[in-house]
Amino acid sequence: MLSTHLPVVSRTTLARLVVGISFVTTLGSVVACSDASSPVKVPYPPDLRVLTLETFDGSGQAVHPDVALTPLAWAPDQIQLFATPYPNGDASKENPSLYTGKSFVDWLVPPGVMNPIARPVTGYLSDPDEVFNPETNELWLYYRAVTGENQIWLIRGSALATWSSPTLVASGINHTIVSPTVVRRGTGDWLMWSVNSGTTGCTSNTTTVELRRSSDGISWSNPVTTDLAEPNLFAWHIDVEWIPSKQEFWAVYNVKIPGSCTTAELHFARSTDGLHWEMEPGPVLTRGTIPAFADIVYRASLLYDPSTDNVTLWYSGARYQNGRYDWRIATERLPASQLLGRIATTLPGGGSAVTTAPPLTDADAP
Image (cartoon, rainbow, N blue to C red):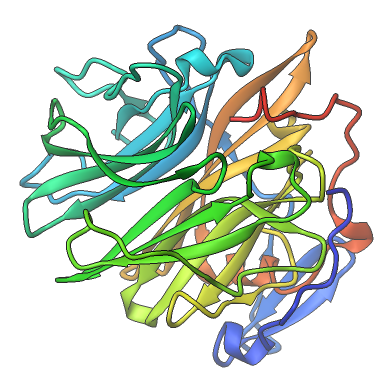
């Protein structure tokens, strides 16, 4: 966010992608140039760094990364990362766990924190998504509880090691509220996107991306269906961020084909209102880019830094080995112009590596 990248519904013009920058395609890379004398080569495959995480189960395997910035007065390290351990597909370990960023690639469990942050009564807790709320000076964590229905819960952190009891904020039949992602754009202006895959789950033939609104982040409206959609490719897990300096929402999402849970590409879309979206023609990432993601590219998260114009992405994915899937998280930092250059053109030959791994099913998809 499957083996072939198909045409998209609408394509953003190159002039809209980066004002004053033109993109020229070469056979394996994209070149961005502000003028004829100063080309900037956009690397593909990207240079990813696989993270070493201390998971509470001891496996180091994890999925569903999500990040948020917190003020220095709230925590000494400003970037907080949530992920869910998923050792070889063991859903009983799939519960939100917290890490704090010491550097670009160094992530540690904060002092005083005992992972997982939240534990289920039954089932498991997946799809964490966090947002800092300056009005309450709290880090808010949303996650999906999967039992007999989909339930979206909220816990509020007044400090890294101090969390509230959970509050139920949304619910629906399985699997109609998958991968919630929340944005607080300002006072009284909250938005939540999620994926509706109907009662079938990830083996469904189609999905839709839905939008809810709230004035407080707790009570949410009924969902409306957005136009974030592509022919024969369907969003499965999504992360949306508001980019104030550009007055746009940016979304990254892995895509599935009808009947399959095994996602091979991560796509990118932009919107000014959160309801109407423009999808880019090229993938952000494809499976096979690095050995750790040989067979699956999954949920991702992004942060944009307007002071440097850099984008940092956290990816999750898996490779099939020794009869099981091994799930990992990797990160990448690059200038926004390079990211936009990468996704401006479809990759030669479709871009997605062929996999011989057995397909995921609803029973083993995180």
